Image (cartoon, rainbow, N blue to C red; front, side):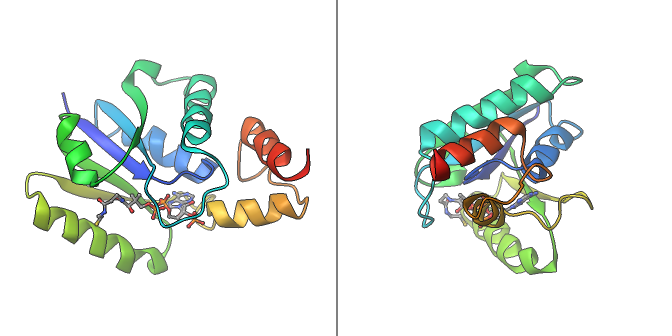
Length: 165
Ligand code: COA
């Protein structure tokens, strides 16, 4: 069984992330969504909140996929250690635009240097989601704009509660 890991901060999960999650099943039999605890980002949502938002998203929207093919876990420390500990062999990341490329290329190479049995696969983001980022979504939500095109209704509500409730 081929197990892949899709790591990120997911603060919060967007429709762009979800698109990558679903499409990953064309490549792996099981996908572990690895939610980073240690991040240089000052996150709006706690690790527990980010994990449970992704869990809810998968339960509600992954209609054609088997929910058992997904596992959402928080992680600390080196990503490649997490990949090994979970018997996975692939890291999956989304690539939105050329601007993402340098960072992703650097990260993929660094991970390969420290763990040569782990490969990174970069999936091009769908045309409809390639401009989304969690920061943009948070800024729009903070200013009371409509984020329905970018996130699910659950995440939209969670953002509203954080900023305006
Ligand atoms: N759709 C929508 N948004 C997307 C996206 C997609 N398909 N792909 C990326 N993004 C956005 C995210 O929303 C995020 O936006 P933000 O910066 O506004 O928050 C941004 O692109 C990138 O964030 P994300 O994908 O969450 O990755 P990250 O850079 O925050 O996470 C880790 C990087 C956690 C995977 C990486 O730092 C890591 O592996 N850390 C562990 C420590 C380690 O092993 N370090 C060595 C690695 S070389």
